[in-house]
Image 1 (cartoon, rainbow, N blue to C red):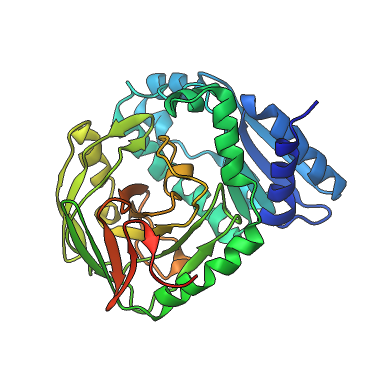
Image 2: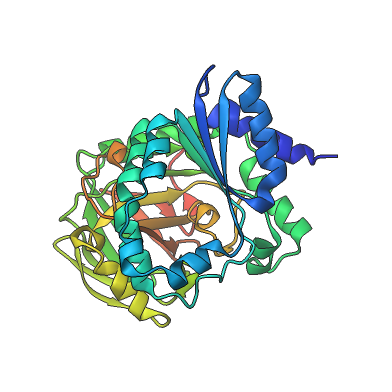
Length: 357
């Protein structure tokens, strides 16, 4: 018998997160371990008279591809993927990792090369504004989180299966603060950072694009970031952990970057393109059903009481203009001695909101 929590998550994804109408082609990218959720999603799509297109990833393929693909292959544009992105009315991406360290030994430059090539396809999907990404609980994710699979399933579904319409309503006040604000100040351990959000719009995230969701974000004014920040948790890219990250900004750009682990990857990503050194996002964690770091950014950036800043590409709906093949979120925990202000108002201190939501 299927877990009723899977049925509920599939309902949220197909009835709330994205719009589906009769005749639509809906693209589903997934890992094979997510089969129970994928089948429920397909059932719901078919009942609506729409057409599911499932692209299931094979365990080990990503490793084989990046290990053996020469640069000319990495630089080859995927025309079939572009065609599907143009034809699809919406898309659902479901992560279901069986080995989160699969790509640890791969040269970081390969990821950078490939990301530049496929960026136009990603932009096609983003422009349609009818997509959602989700994480399915697997043993690999449970191991990274130091949990049993049963414990991780409880953790994951507690984060995803919420009344997202009610969450959206609560986020309205925070959006209003961002919309009216001009300057953001972030203060904490080894951190004193400022940037402008003047003229930028706060975007509420309540189950429409990420699952789990729960954040409000905007795009900082590109050349305004000044100061330094020390991040609380590892930033993970391609299965590699970059830990102990410290960044220094001047006139918006990173002018110095250090890490205690995999600093070479940090520098490689910063050199991807000009935009990789500028901030593309300022996000405020709003999911208090998530209280611990598990090395999965889809969960971690939503932790209630944290903020995150992304290097690289800005989501245009938040007013950001920065362009890059990179979008790399890094998290600052404010729950133990941190705070952030908008203009002259302290919005959050020690992980608790000081404004009524």
